[in-house]
Length: 427
Ligand SMILES: *[C@@H]1O[C@H](CO)[C@@H](O)[C@H](O)[C@H]1NC(C)=O
Ligand SMILES: *[C@@H]1O[C@H](CO)[C@@H](O)[C@H](O)[C@H]1NC(C)=O
Image (cartoon, rainbow, N blue to C red; front, top):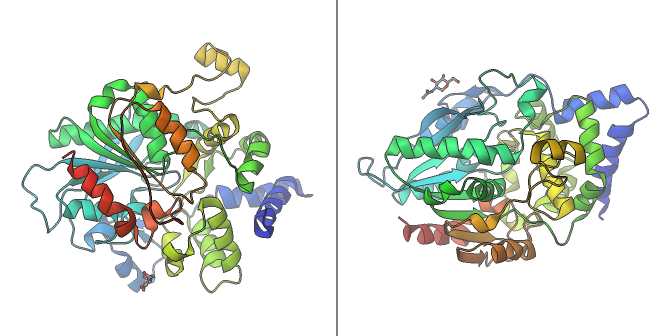
């Protein structure tokens, strides 16, 4: 374990077990789950316009996209369990006609991200712009709990009940709601799905738990697939395996259910610790790379202040806890409530496993060889159990890490060109 990582862990433990408990928990709460002020989003204004006004607000998806003169739309859908999701669409581009009926591609973000993450680099670089240029009707999802989908018909996000979900519910309720909406709206019968990280986890859960969706996804593209976690562990992961239950319980007891919302406090904190001129820049990068895989060549550090105003965008503690359970059990299965509650919910002591052999839709796996959250051996474990894998591609650039799938400087050349070539076969 490196020094900085140990430092981060020790800092965490001190915050958790500090001598003045009340105070340390207030610090912890302020950092992990800060109250207002939340970041203000300004509809339709581009980041440049906001900078000129010297505003602390951030642009929304519509502003990010329209600054490049691409069409963009926002749509609302309410899931059957009451969450209001706002998600986005780029129906085409100046390079492709807006009139003809186009194949629909649905793009889904990973943990604590939002639709914004897919449009931060601009045309010619981001996957969704490239897809729009290539003649696709691109829909970009937002899961419950992030800044676009922090709303429910009766529950308030201030209410702990609001946050009682993990990626299981996103897969079971959010994806069907958004996918059905996009299909209805466009009058199509099926679409092409592209997910990153948790966007892959949720696609496997959807297709195993609600197999009727196998007909509605005519191709599933997985960037950095996450399902089974059986092999090598980084120091941070080992720490989580050993202490996850304790951390989760402690946070829960403190009434912390939401983690890292998009807020001015977190943005300013990350910015001041991590920007290129900060004394702590190197330490910060080190922690980041330990977590996601080290790839300085593909990460443009000049963009840090810009990126941290859009990411993280919020998640529930339970989502992280569900992943930590997978990490510790090595199994891909429903949330573990403990022996007694499991019996009540599942009629068995252990949570039921997701049966990925029910996935009949064609799946294409793209993975990096330097991705500690999606090791090649674990991707192969998944591949072994899937019945219809149409491509399994290790990115040729050896340092490709977990976030490179979205933000790598050369993502187009290293990944997106191949992806688009593949999905052309499923038009
Ligand atoms: C979506 O919901 C917001 C309020 O949350 C509303 O302002 C907006 O008009 C709605 N958009 C559509 C397309 O229904
Ligand atoms: C990094 O980002 C800055 C700011 O947008 C840009 O000027 C620079 O060209 C980028 N560097 C690379 C290697 O893309």
